[in-house]
Amino acid sequence: MPYTARQATLEDLDTIVRHRYLLFAEIGHGDQAVMKAGKTPYTAWLRERLLNRRYQGWLMETASGEVVAGVGLWLMEWPVGVVDLVPYRGYVFNVWTEPAHRRKGLSRQLMGMLLEACREQGIRRVCLHASDAGRKLYEVLGFTPNNEMMISLPAPAAPAPH
Image 1 (tube, one colour):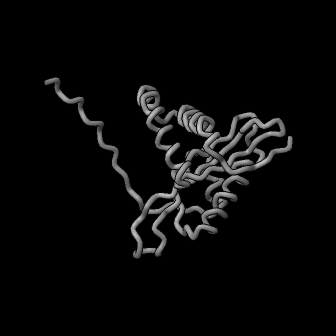
Image 2 (spheres, helix red, strand yellow):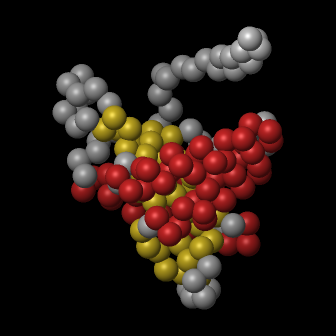
């Protein structure tokens, strides 16, 4: 089946959001109630970043125009001067391929486009959190584990009624 890659636009907002929530549902990561509550604010967040180009996405579609895979790049503001002089770091997320279209190199091709866009924009540091299914692809592309640590704090308690 022939595929065509293209850059995402604001018209792809709903597709990108749908892919994100399919990914988290598939890997069993995320509380369903939190995911449902977060969909509207996430959509607004993504809309703003698509408009100001702090989120850039690439999509793969079939000959009939069905979007079957996508990747996203968030250009995060980052302090200048310790590692490099670019005020942004790339963060890869929203990597998703519809199950019927997997194992065809679509994510690899889209990731290549994303990394090329980073090079063109002078983005030298690109990071991501890999699912078990995606880890091999990212290693082949040159991503390596680093020493980042993280803590997940509990959500704040609901304020007491007044």
